[in-house]
Image (cartoon, rainbow, N blue to C red; front, side):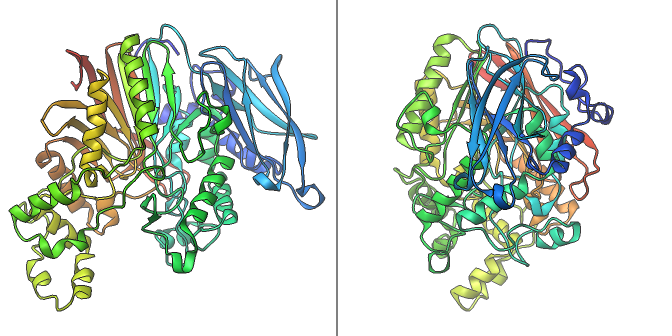
Length: 581
C-alpha cells in the first residue's frame, strides 16, 4: 500500500486491461469474476471481505441449496498469499443453515498487518469465485486510496460504478456510506418504469417488510455483476443509512413505515438489521474489541498505520430524534423573521440528537488518539452530507417560477400540501426563506451537527475530512461551525445508480445544471456539486496532501459503459487545518 502518490484517471483503456500492476488474477477483467459466480450454482452470490483490523478480516459468501441439501450445509474456507493457492495459509470449516439464510461469515485471524490475501470457499466439489482481502496496515504508511460509494438502487440500473471500482488500481479499500439496498417495491414504485424497461424489477415485487423480504432483496442485489466484481476485488468498510430498513427512520419509526398496514416498527427494523448482518461482510458484536455492543450500534473505527484514522457513524437507529416536517410549520413561516425563528427554535432546538452517547464517546476517543499519535488525517464515514445546504433564492435567480399565486389560491390544507409537493414549488418556497434543502439530513439537526464539531475540536481535531453519501450528487464542501471557524472539508458521492435529485425531480438537464451552478455560487459552504452523473469518488491521502477524483459513468441502463473523470480536487494540510487547494 505504500507507493508514490499519483492522481491517475480511471481510463477506458485501464478498465479494459483490468487492474494493471496487480496480481495475476486481478488482470482478468472483473466481469469474468462475476460471471464465474453466476455460472456457479452453489456460490451464485459471489464472495466478499470486509470490516478488517490489522490481523483479521471478515470473509463472506452464500451457499445456494436445493431440495434435500436445503438444511444444514458444511464446507471449508481457505486463504492464501497468492491467487494460485500454492500454499494455503489458513483454512477452516463452516456450517450454515436456513436460520442464517445459508450465508457464511468467518473471521480470518492471525494475519499480517497490511497484508493482501486471496480466499475461497468449498462445498463438496463446488469451489467459489476467488476473492482478495486486505488487513489494515501498521507503522509507516505513505499513501491510502479509498473509494467512496453510496446509493445503489437495483431498479434504476446496473451497478457499473461498482465494476469500475473493481478495476481501479489506485483503490485500497471501499467505503460504502449506506443505501446499499432500497426497500421500495410495487408495480408503480420509485424507478419501476425504468426497471421494467431494462429488466431489473425489484424482488420481491412489493415493498420489503419481513425478514424473508429483506433477505430476498439482499440476495437480488448480490447478483449484480458489478457488485460481485467490486466485492471480490476490494475489502469493504461500511455503514448504513436509511433504505437498508425504510426511508427516513428515527428511533420511533420511519417516514416509509405505516404501522396500520406494515406492523410494528421495531419488528421490521430488527428484521432489516438481521438480514443486513447476514448478507454483509461485517463483524458480529462478539468479534469486536469492545464487548457488549448490539448489532444496532453499527459504527466502526479503522486505523491506517501512522497516516489516517477513519470512523464511521450510526445516524438512524440508536439516537435520532424525529425529523421536522416543513408542512407542519409552513403556515407560520411568512417572512424573514419567522423563518429565522423557525431555524433557531424548531430546527435548532437543543437535545435533538443524531449520534448516540456511545457513538460520540467512541468518536471522541478515536480522534483524541489519532491526534496524540500524530496521524495527519482524520476521516469520518458519514451517511449524509453534513455541510450547510440552505437553498438560495431560485426564483430571484430566474431558475424556478414564483409559486406564490398558486400557494395563496389554495382553499384547504390538503390542497396546499398537494401544491407544495411539486418539487419546483417546494424548492422556491425553501429558497425564499433560505431554509435547508432536507430536514432529514444534518441541515435538520443543527444542534447535533454543532455538537459533533465541538466534540472534534475538543479532541484537537478540528481538521476532519468527511466522506459522505445519501444525496445522489457529487459534492466538494468547505465546512464551518456556527461561529465561522473551519471544521474541515467534505467530499460527497453521487449514487451508484440512484438518480440525481434535480434530474429525478423533473427538472430538465439545462435547469438541473443551472441549479448545480447556483448551489456552488450562492451557498457559502458548497464549492462544487454535480447531480447529473452516477459514479464514485476516489480519495487518495498521502502525508501532507491528497486528491479527490470524481469518477462518473456514462450510463447505468446497460452493463456496457464508459467512465469519465468529472473533476479532480486537491487538498492539503496547512497550519493544523485541512484545506482545498
